[in-house]
Amino acid sequence: MTNIKELLNGKKAALFDLDGTLVDSMWMWKQIDIEFLGRFGYECPPDLQKAIEGMSFSETAVYFKKRFSLPMTLDEIKSCWTDMAADKYRYEVPLKPGAADFLRFCKRNGIRTGIATSNGRDIVDAVIEALGLDEFFDVIATACEVPAGKPEPDIYLEVARRLKTDPAECLVFEDVPAGITAGKRAGMTVIAVEDDFSRPMEAEKRELADGFIRDYSELL
Figure 1: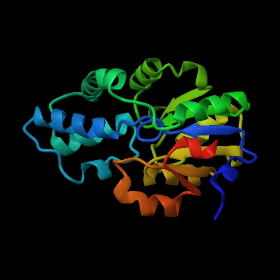
Figure 2: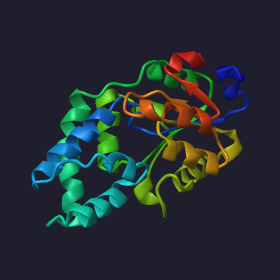
Figure 3: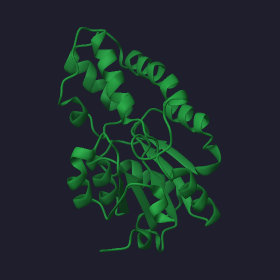
């Protein structure tokens, strides 16, 4: 079995998904879905999280509006989610174990860094500010900026393009199968990150990815 640290060899860039990968926030989004749908008299369907896995913020709004016949515009839906998420991100969402030390390692060793997230930019900015991560990222891109969300490779290819780095020299960190697939389709090496939300998918994550970590310190 490949030593997890060996996956860093020859890599010039580290690309991170946000929710469930860099920050421990997947629990929050399920709670927001429950509260949001409750306003319209709906219970949160058990298949919802899997159905929207990898979708961009905008794609998810389209899905919600169509599936639940919501009497709101897409911008109103996204604005509502942003408002509901902002305080939780600022006060209740921590970095994943070892992530801060690994980001410092990347900075010291000249490994460029980027965020490739399905979330909206306003929310990403709130997270970056709350956790003091501004200095660590060279590029931040959202799936709303590319033609298709994960599992399509668009977002990862866009971040690599902005970093001026060959995809083969990029190391991707992801927490769900759709994201892992996106990274692999982009021609990148992918490390799966443990997360409570996706624990039932661990076997699938291990099969799809090139490596698996429970803590970023495993790479140091």
